[in-house]
Image 1 (cartoon, rainbow, N blue to C red):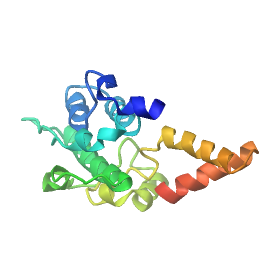
Image 2 (cartoon, helix red, strand yellow; image 1 turned 180 degrees about the horizontal axis):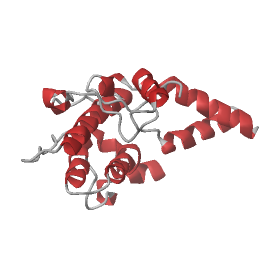
Image 3 (tube, rainbow, N blue to C red; image 1 turned 135 degrees about the horizontal axis):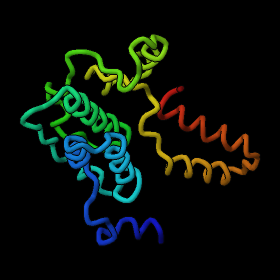
Length: 180
């Protein structure tokens, strides 16, 4: 019943959070993590049955692109490629635009003096991010809905110990996203 209701397009919000809309929000001053979090809710939650629609539209490049917006555009392009690969959704062409390859490495919000974190991000960033010079590590886009499903799966396998359930869910996460 719940799964069927999620397929009903009439139950979608008025404005479905696409990646193009998330980038538009970033370009107009929204906190990037808020805009991307809203997109993630659509991708993993209420609009997962229309994922290709969430990433089809290319990002609108601003007339005056700042370094900040170029970074986040590359991040959005990498995110689309990563999520499409992860979910088996055909990746649109726009993320492969060479514009989304940054000329210099970008590590997000960490201090460049923190060499241990820099090295960890370099070593663990998924290929769609690293090839665009975006180094963010592999802990992005963890799916809270998936985690719930893995816990339910553990229960269905007869696992009842809370520690064993967490371990089971963690192993599933590592199998998909890699070790932290």
